[in-house]
Length: 93
Image (cartoon, rainbow, N blue to C red; front, side):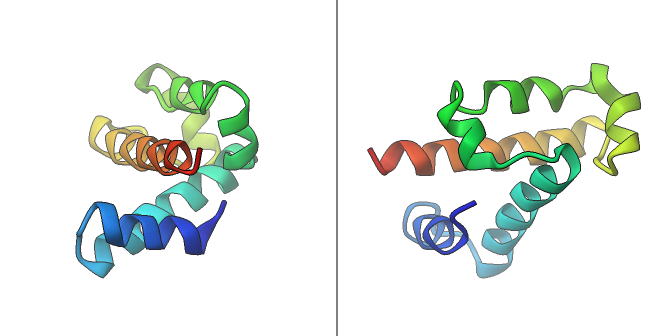
């Protein structure tokens, strides 16, 4: 993940408090660790479609085994962070 560039982009585009910016970055890192992926590689491979599909309540049993939330609110937060990362990467084109 391009941590510094993503943080700067969030600061400029989202205009959220620093704590929320850090939360978004931490969520993407957590997904990378939990799913054992590189978010930038996933972006280049169909813009993280597979990642978003895996973050589904239907995959709750699997998600428990990789220490990711299985409730709809937790999954929604993770998906929102991935979508923001996609927007960030799209802005670099």
